[in-house]
Image 1: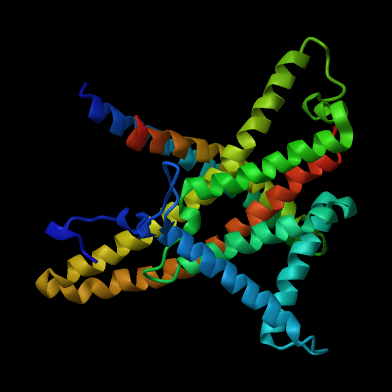
Image 2 (image 1 turned 90 degrees about the vertical axis):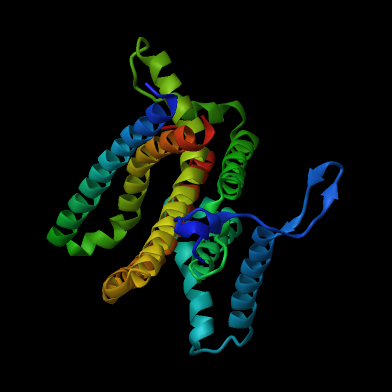
Length: 253
Length: 75
C-alpha cells in the first residue's frame, strides 16, 4: 500500500488499469478496472431487483423489502417533483439513482474502485440527463419550450440580462451536476486514504505506534460518514434530475 | 513570483470559496431544522426542497473547487 520512499500517494487509488487491452480504429477501448466495476454494479443491481421481486411474498423478506423500498423511494420522489406526467421518466431516474448509489457504495469497499470518482463517467450521466431535457422539451413544446429562459413579469429593460443569466444557469447545470458527484467521491476517498497513511506512519514511528488507534477510530467514523454521503449524493443526483425533467415537462415560470 | 507558487496560492484561495459555500449549506439546513422543530408535521413534505436548495448552494462552492482542480492539474 505505502508508496516507495514513504511518500503519501492518495491519488493512486483512482488509476485506471487495462485488464484486456483492445484498440478499435485508433480508439482505446480496453476493458479496464473501471469497466469491470461497472459490470459488477450492473450485476449487483440486477441481482437485487430480479431476485428481490421473484418471490412476491405478501410479507416481504429482507431482499424483497430492499427492492420494494428503493422502488417506492424513487417513485415518490419523481411523482412529488415532476408530477404524474414525469412518471414516464421513472425508468431513467431509477436507473441513474441505482447506478450512482451502487457505484458509490461498492467503491467504499477497501481495494475496490469507485466508478463515480472519474469526471468523465459523471459528466456522461449528466450530459444524458440534460440532452434528455432539451430533446424532450423541444419535441413536446416546440419553440414554446424556450420560454423557460424568459421570466414573466419583468420590465423590458432588464429582460436581456435576465435571459442571459437564465441561459448561463442552464448551461452550468450539467457541469455542477457532474462535478458535485465527482468531487464528493474524490474528496471522500482521498481523506480516507490520508487517514490510512497516518496509521502506517504512526506504526512505523516506534513508541508513537500506540497512538495509531486514533486515526483507526477516525477512519471508522469517516467510513460511516462516507456511506451517508454515498446515499446523499445519489439522492441529490436523482432529485436534481427530476427537477430538470420538470422543466422539460412544464416549461415557463 | 514563481509561477508554480502562484498556482498553489491560487488553488488555496479558491478553497476559501468552498468554505463560504459551506456557510450557505449550513444556513439552509439550520433554517430547515428550526422550521421543522416548530412544525414537525410539515417537515417531511419540505425535505426534498431543502436538499434541492442545499445542492444549488453547494453548486457554487463546486465551481470554486473546479477552479482549484484546474489550477493544480490542468494549467
